[in-house]
Length: 279
Image (cartoon, rainbow, N blue to C red; front, side, top):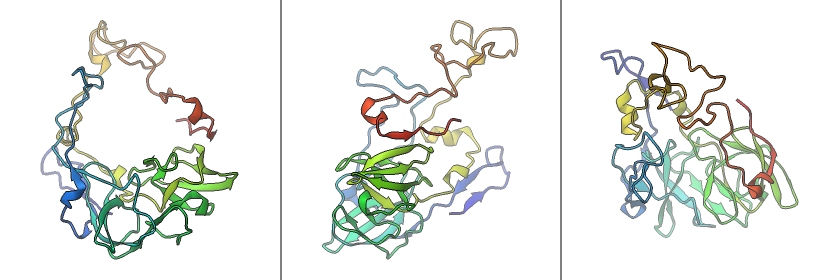
């Protein structure tokens, strides 16, 4: 997918680029597959801010994707590749023989007119867009859109350009190498999509100006070094000064940058064979 670069006509345009999203086939939104999305701006049910620097993003409709309980054992034809403002990847509109329509995550190489299918009980053809249980996918195959547990919502490997690969299968478990480098066990009953998620060049886009970040719902941040000493561990001092600490810290004094923040759950940790890459 090509990246369009602008001429430096303004300071905001200088160095900015956009991704020319792949749009093919039907582009009309299906009303039945749209729903409203409430923007909480980082606040909890009590109205207290729990996540800072959020709010003011563009109003949009949420597209209902078949991440949970997709239609199985029925062939569907891809009628359109569409842009989704709620995610980095593109989505595909698929039509079933009985007239039912659904949105699914588009993978790299999926084209209008392709036939895709989902099944938990059958071995399908290894081609982009087909979705089947991990027990039917041989080792070394690139996959994405994976269920963490059978019959649950597919939540793993959904970002643009990301992919995982199957390694081996034994005793009802399949070893999968995740995008982070972590090797993890999955049940062989979990569904996964063949292929890599679309929009592989998404991470190469340069925003160019602060306004494009505001459209995404990210509000300005203040550096800790620019604060007073009572407001941040990095604050204080005369003029420009280093943080004065061995390691960076958050505003609440906790270690930042380079420390693991993932919460360890015993049931999940037991399935990890090799930890992710250390940066």
